Amino acid sequence: MKQIRFEQQYRPGWESLEQQLTQLEAVRVSRRKALPLDHFVGDYRQLCHQLALARERSYSLELQQYLNNLVLRAHRQLYRYNPPLAERIGQFFAHGFPQAVRRQWQWHLISALSFVLSIALAWWLVQQQPDMVYTVLDESSLADIEMMYQPEGSDVNVHEGRTGEDDVVMFGFYIKNNIGIAFRTFAGGLLLGVGAIVVMLFNGSFFGAIAAHLINVGGDQPFFTFVIAHGAPELTAIVLAGGAGLRLGWAIIAPGAYTRLDALRLAARDALPTMYGVFTLLLLAAFIEAFWSPREFEPMVKYAVGAACWGLLYLYLIFGGRDGSRKR
Amino acid sequence: MRIDDRLEIETPEGALLTLSLAGPVTRAMAYGIDLLLRLLIFAIVALLLSLAGKAGTGLMLITLFLLEWFYPTLFEALRHGQTPGKKWMGIAVVHSNGSPLSFNGSLIRNLLRTADAFPLFYLLGFVSTLISPRFQRLGDMAANTLVIHVENPATSSKNEQGYNEAPDWSLNRDDQLALLAFQERHEQFSEARQQELAQLAYPELSPPLALKKLQAVTRFLMEGAR
Image (tube, rainbow over all chains, first blue to last red):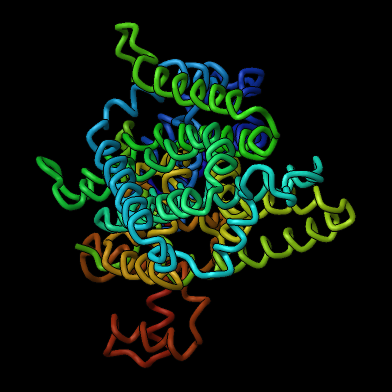
């Protein structure tokens, strides 16, 4: 069959398919059911057949290109990813997230250890030798921190006169800063895990040095009552982001039975649920840090609430989603 | 192996799809356009929020966060793999089997952007696109995605009338393709260049005659003996 006759015979079919595609591309996934699409799949199969014929018979490249583009568009519509969103989100927090965290517990453990050990080391050093704190922080930022956590009974209290507007400012700051750090930690893991480990060590020694320094100058109570509640989701989330990043880095260092590319793909897919969780935890942390932590209460109340945060979070991560059904 | 930027994918129906991959320069330009657009959005939002006083500062920081991390993800996931910059440049992100980008795929490739931007100006990502046979940056490799050209040139099956003539040698497939490509693209060349090309087929004829003859033969290929 010559190209001209081929085109004459099948062009009406292509044009009708094109119309259906234009309709499909215009509407959202949820509204597609309303469209008259009875012939779509059949038309698409025929189109694939005709493209193969056009290639086999060496019809003009222009025609082949046209058919190829049409197949591409139809293929995209037919194999489109179509999630029922609310149900999946519910499933994710009931099962997916804690299961994903436990599935990669080794990495989170390494990440947590590097964090905790660097806290302990910095803490110990600053306690032994108070001047060591200046190796981590410069004088002016240290003065700022001391201002924030004045010991009980002093005249100045920075949290007094703090308005709802300040809370919103801090909320925005925590979102931008902390979630950005977590995402960067994860991506840093791709650089053979080095980026993730560096962030954990750096943040750990920072936190340890500040804590020890504030104990030295007597500001420990305001500091710990401030950080204990939001520390649970915040520190946990950073550790989890580090663990997920390490998992990526290890996939490149030691891909095992896979090619490095495949190992990386699998690792990324495996780590993604953890990152959704990290994001949620940090949102939660930002809320607590901006709207609860600066409020003045009896230290006992603050410690109790903080302990409840830590307890609930780890109960959830360790026992959540263990109902025998191994959904992934 | 063909040394060009095309990639062939077989669909479950057995048809071969040809995707044409987008190179680093096109992608960098798309990124630049997106960057400008983001700055513009931020400037407008900042202007509006500065009226809202202190709480506005908080919202501004959140806007900055969303623009940095979720601008590409949301556009790619909701707008057929295209941010405005990519749309402008006529490129789109797809999964490596040619199917449209899912939210997860988009999120992986955009979360890992930081690693590609390491240490400065997307150096690692640039090197990675050059090394990768499919022009993938690190984030693309992890998410298993490709960036392709999506412009859709409408077919113009214009048939110049004229006499046609069967070729005087037996055509193989490559000859056919070469002739058809000539027929479709000859308007992009100057007359002299066309004649020069035609002389490759008919070195014994004068340039204008060679071109005429070649056009007749390609016409024969397009239309056949009707």
